[in-house]
Image (tube, rainbow, N blue to C red; front, side, top):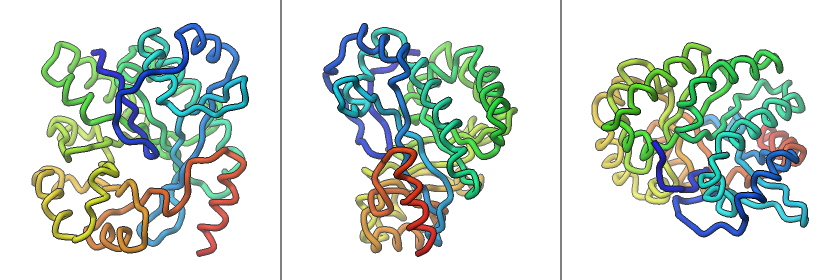
Length: 275
């Protein structure tokens, strides 16, 4: 089920890129606990803060904070991307204790191979219970392209089982879509709870008619499923207004805050909460 390395996050467009780190560097960083989470707010349509998305960052010993473009391909090559995914989820579950009074949902990106590991659901259940975090407030984000590429392979049943196991915990699943395509099987079996429209689509928000075309490509099945739809990449009040007019339930983008550390995001939450 290996897919071509791609960086797919709320603060990064899809791209393949050379990595500056070696496989050994990444492995040492995992063992040293250098992979952390930076957070970006996700807002309800009324701009109240709904959730935080945890985005993987490497606190490099040289003082730099490195984005996924600097390490993800070597993590793939070294077979340790799942270790990074788990490390970031664990850090995020610990960090959320600092903003627990807001009772915010937590989003975390996971690679498809991480999810499909037979031990992942058990590991996740333990991670949630050990930090007393309600499973219904965690949303795992998956890439639609990776899912689509797997659908015609022998690994598809394994993916479906993995999604079933995670959903049985009560955890939500968001699909990050660049073309508005989600397998009907996922919707019919309640294996996806949210559609995240990528910033490449969101940047075409104006005029609103373009969004009507995008949503039309999603098909009647998604409309009937009543999935929550998040507009990612909001950069202005006008694009946010267009997303609301379209019916998006949540908003995310630089307009509401750049990804930042767990301590700094507290100030961002407070500021947004007062608006």
